[in-house]
Amino acid sequence: MKHPARSEYSCSVLVMSCMVSATPWSVGVPWRIVRAMPASRSRTHVAILFSEHAAPERYVISKLADYWRQDGLLVDYLFETTRFVPADVLMLHVDLSVLPRRILSFASRYPRVINQHVSDIRKRTFSTLIVPRPSEHAGPVIVKTNLNFGGGPESGNHPNPLVRSYHRARRLYLRMLTGSWGYRIYPSTQAVPKLAWCDPYLVVEKFVPERLGDEYAVRVYNFFGERDSSFLVTSPDPIVKGGAEARIRPLEPDPRLRALRRSLKLDYGKIDYVLSGGEPIVLDINKTVGLTDIADEPSVEHARRERARAIYDFLP
Image (tube, rainbow, N blue to C red; front, side):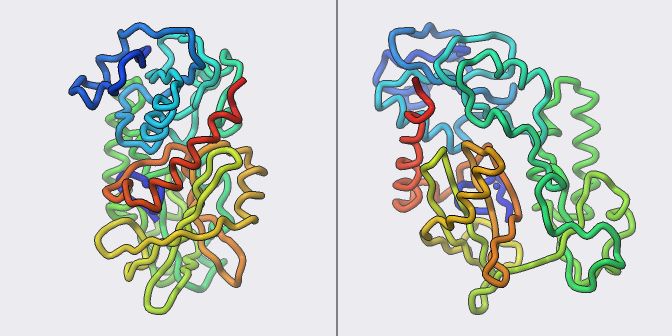
């Protein structure tokens, strides 16, 4: 399941001053301007590390940061690794499937790091559905990009403009094979284009849908530390994503997803999964969850606010 914003419910400053009651966005100050504002060191300090060209307001973490500021915490947005700003805890929120060494090295300078053990979320690292060759599966399959969100973050975040251009060209080519959402379903392995089988940027997986009546379903497990919430998203489209036709309702978190999160050493993010034969099958892992047009739906907002309280488990 995918959505352009990689949402918390669908399938995805340098220093900022908090000495004023309003956030920079509420008073019309562009978010990048706050890089130069001074910060007080008298309060508990949370730093969030983004990609160089990230827009924080597109991500769920910006909502959590607002809650923390309301609680009196000092929250700084950092962009890439050009300057070290001391903080009590660093949230690694770099929107890349594989984190470069420079990011991990920079993060190691902080006393506490959220998601420090998660450096690779490419599908080949966790998927149990991959079909390595056409002869090994007879049913329908789905072709995806190995990188998260169709490799979109990689196409715009690399420091080298030539590499960025290469990734953009690759992404256009991949869309021909996977569609605009980075997913395309084929009735059998024989229908999959030959290029997809030998392209390292793509994976071919068994298509294992969960059906509820006439609709398709995907379950979304959101978490921050030990605080978590789950939602069921249904749609008539076999590729479940946010939109007018999608429906959402809260679920009790599945203990098996909690165990999986702990085994993967994930601190913050979401896992999309389906149930097949009563067993959870992971479809996607996302550690930089995006916002969508129903991000302020009461049940979603309440669950998000509760998860935000987990920051205190990471503070001294």
